[in-house]
Length: 253
Image 1 (spheres, one colour):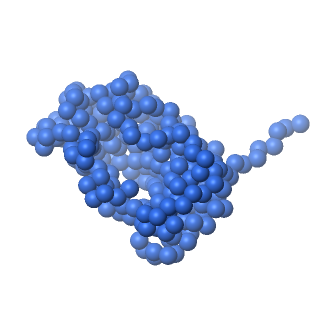
Image 2 (tube, rainbow, N blue to C red):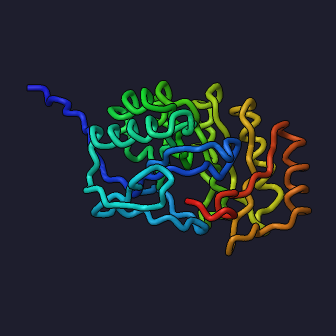
Image 3 (spheres, rainbow, N blue to C red):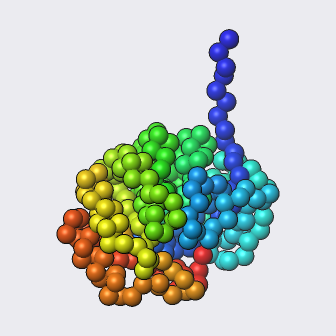
């Protein structure tokens, strides 16, 4: 007898809040952030707790900064109800729903059930480390924007997964989105140029964002170093931008 497929419609979440997007080409756009637990990488610079909490920290009202605990796992019915209420409460304010983490694509089985519903509430923006191309492919029709990070070895402390990044970029090449790379003083120029070559070869229409690492609320690189990185990368890929983490400077989530 064949085993029936029972869709999963609930999963643990870390937090749910409304704020501005502080990174990349959508800087300043208001989003609803849905943060998923778990990550398949362990980047040295990352300060996010990836564990699955007993409850999800959710804002009482969008942008209020006042939180309550929602029991985990969170169901699609509960999440959709909250998001619909927030969008109706502040009409025209939210650009999109950011699916972030951790690594949201680790929850691809749940997302297959969630995304058709969530996209009817607000357009969807996926933030991902770009290492799970097989999980991305079936979800792409429901996602408006994809923001993929290139995990440079100089920043993460682990070998850059160039082949997986290339496969991932090939899938999102004709989608709206961006490619980000966190950079620091220790990032060699050759690494920057290799990232630019990868984007140019696999997804030439997408911008490459060089994001300087933030340390103690300050950018860790000099302006001159960033300009040099941009100049060298621009010899390979025409759309290279320097954009720091702006939300860190105005003290919002």
